[in-house]
Amino acid sequence: MKVFGIGLSRTGTTSLNTALNVLGYRSFHFPPMQKIPSLLDQGWNAMTDSPIASTYPLLDRMYPGSKFILTVRDPLEWRKSVRKSLSIYPPGDWTFFMHQALVGTPTKPPVGLDLVDLYWAHAAAAEEYFRDRPEDFIAIDVSAPSAWMRLCDFLGKEIPNVDFPHENRS
Image 1 (cartoon, rainbow, N blue to C red):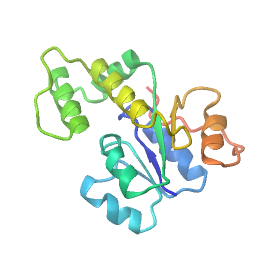
Image 2: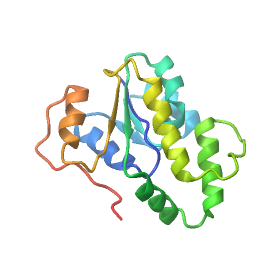
Image 3: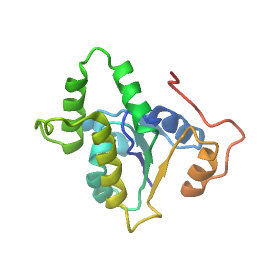
């Protein structure tokens, strides 16, 4: 079974990656797109962050029976975090980049599209895609007190006796 973290960057994907490693998965954070199949063939059985966030339908077809985890957080705090961590890009450029990553083609985003709009569109698309398959999909806020319980229940794992990892806190 493969596990894919399909949350957008800055939604707790690094924390999820660490948690998956704690649970015994061999998890790769932010894999290069062209190397995903070969990495999975080399024994990596979990992946998080981009480009996983935009390729989950393809990965679902390629690896049936996999589990998909959408990491979520407050969208306004997410936008603030994205802008802070990527302050070298003007907000419009980052929106353009995220739009391209999510739609998979180099198209311009609609005029006035904001990062929060992209966040909600991504979450809605993932929830709709897995609507009839709750055994394959979970949306989780990794900062919630119930994060370990929900993640371990979803993956059929025992809750480890350590705090849930919280990487990249601002």
